[in-house]
Image (cartoon, helix red, strand yellow):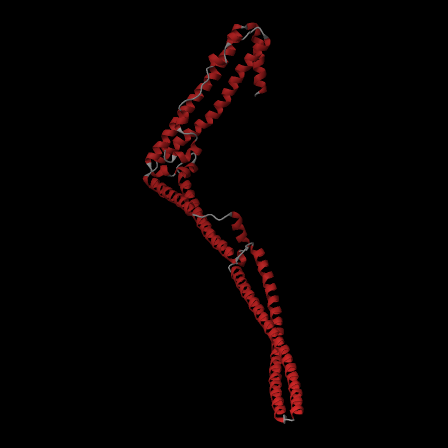
Length: 396
């Protein structure tokens, strides 16, 4: 069918829709006078009004068909005018028609390849366009900083637990040193008493034993004292380190809270759940804008060439130059022009048949039937003519 399938909305129905024009059988359906008792006023009045209504409907239909017939005829006349133009004008028409068709094809291809962005997403990105791409970079940096702060908190917490563990070790060590000190003192006292008993009982010289016991006890106590004070000094360092870690951890927690609040605010501001989502939406928005800009430019080109085409056609004295925008193919392809002309001729023939039929209804069957009633039933003639006059008065 070619271009006719695209322009049928402008030229009406296709050829095969007019193959058969419905025509009711008046003799069999409407005008069965034998079934009417003409001496019955109600039946007679109803029958006359039925004939008048048929004439009225046919008249209305004839007016509609006449307008359509004139329109189709003007289309055929326009085709003749176009074909009668000089070759120079035809070449200009072909040039603009080709450009219009190229733009239409490009638009179709672009639509096939295009991945449309949801309108709600587009509107959302359009609202925050003024903040982009700096907004994405800020959100990304905030997310990265959140990860670093979390790592710092984890590291500080680990170090704090390690220091607490060392503190417990040092406290245990100090407690053990105190116990060792008691053992050493107790052992020295026990040895002195034992040596004193042995010396008194066996009259032995135990001064060397006293000296050894004192030296051993003093050495042990000195070692314990050193260990204890080393642990005490280290414990002080550990406690200072713990305090520093607690202060540092509190500072990092404040940063974490502030950064978390900022992150939540940015998520709400940009209506996303992550920077990756924002990046994808922004990329789609840029792509969508590029498509829309190309479509806008393409539409401007289309408007320009369509206006130029219509301007030339107006100079050809056509009844409807705008219709050729939608059937530009016919200006290039003679076969398409022949097909359009054939379709219009078939349509005009169909309209002619329908107009003749309705004229026959008005001037023929229905009108003749009323005239025949007046002649055959003269005593009801005035009444019938009054009904006709009243009907014409109501519908004038």
